[in-house]
Image (cartoon, rainbow, N blue to C red; front, side):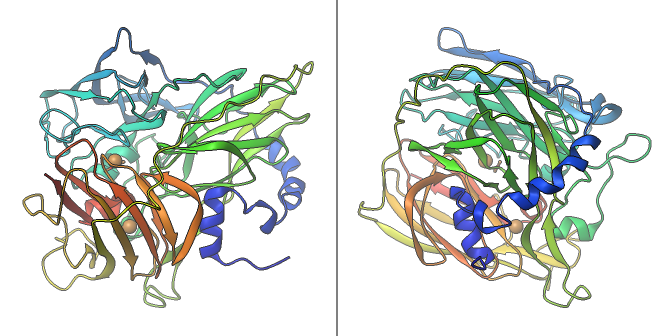
Length: 490
Ligand code: C2O
Ligand code: CU
Ligand code: CU
C-alpha cells in the first residue's frame, strides 16, 4: 500500500477516493462488532419540517435557552423553537423565505443562511444586523429561479459569539428541493454537531487554549442524539443530507459495508453520482449522499482527521489536533426482506465550469496565526492572533472590493501550522487547484479547507448580487477571534 500524505488525502477525501488507501475498510470493519454491541441508541429522530407553499415559507424562529434532550438526557442548552437542531426548512428555487428571528437569549444574536445565493443587503442575508436580547428582526431571502438545489443551513453570526452560540445548540438545516426528483425509498436529514456537558447538564465553556485550537465537544450528536439507529431493508435506497454543524471538528465519514454515492457537496452537484468510500466534511460543509443498503448492519463513523497543531514545539511537544476519535455516529441497521431496485439516478445539472473562463482579477489572501503582539486580538485570544493579510476583522473596513458580474481567482494561502476552512458568503466557489495541483473533477463548495502551510486556488463568479458581506475561517473560534474579512460587491 502506497503511503498517502495528508495533503493528497484532503483532495481525495473530498472525492472519496481515499478509502482503499487508509486501512482498506476491512481493518475498520474488524473492529466494529465490539463497538456495535455498545451502541444501544434509539431510532434516529428528525427535526420538525417546515415547507414552503405557493412560493413562500414564512417562519418564526425563537432562539432561547431551555431544557432540551441531548444524547438521551436533560440538558440546559440553546435551541431554535425549543429544539436542537432547529426545524428543517424546505424550500424551492424561486421561493421567498421569511424568517422572523426572536431573540430570547441574554446576549445579542442574528441569523445567517449559510450557502444560499441571496442578497446580503438590508433584511437579506445581512450578518451586520444585530438583534439585541428581547428584540426581533424579520429577514427575507429571495431565491432566484435557478438557485442550485442542495443542503444549506442557518446559524447565528454575531461576531465574537458565533462559536458559543453554535456549541450551545443554535443551528438547523435548509433544503432547496431538486427540480428533477431523485428516486429514493426515503430521505434523511442528519445534522452532526458536537458539544460538551457537565454533570448537571450545562454546556461546558472550553478553555482558552481549546478555543485557540478550535473547540471540539466530547459529545458528537446526530440530530441531537448520541449514536442513533437508522433502519432499512436490503436493497433500499436512501438519501442522506449530512451537515457538519460542529464549531471546529472535521468529519471524515465512512460507512463501510454499504454502497455510498455522492450526489453533491454544498451547492455543487456532480453530473453523475460518484461512488465513495470516504467523505470529508470540514466545519460548515454538507454532503448529499445516496446509500444503498447491503445485507448487514454497519456503523457511520468519523475517522480521526489531522488538522494540524500549534506552533511546533511551542505548546510543549507540538500538540497535534486530531478531530474525532474515531467516533461512532450512528448504526445503520439492515434487516427484513430485500427490496427491488429503483430507477437509475438521473443526471444532474452542474453549475457553470469556470476553469475555461476569463478571469478579471487575481488576489492572494494570507491566513496567519501568530503571537498577538499588539492589541488587535483583544484580551480573550489566549495570546494568539488570527489574521487575514495581517488584519483582524473590522466591520467598518472593506478588505476586497469586487465588481458585480466579475469572475475572479482567489488563492488562499495558509502560512500557519493548523488547517483553516475558508468560507465565503453569498457566492459559491469552484475549487481550481489544491496546493498547485489542478482539480480534475469540477467541485463547487462554500467551505474549502486550506491545509496547514498550503494553499488552494478558487474561482468565484460574483454574479447577481451586490452588497457587503464576509469571508472567514469556519473554525468558529478563529472567526470570533478576527479571522474574517469584508468583501464589497458593487
Ligand atoms: Cu456558516 Cu459565515 O458562516
Ligand atoms: Cu456562511
Ligand atoms: Cu481557522
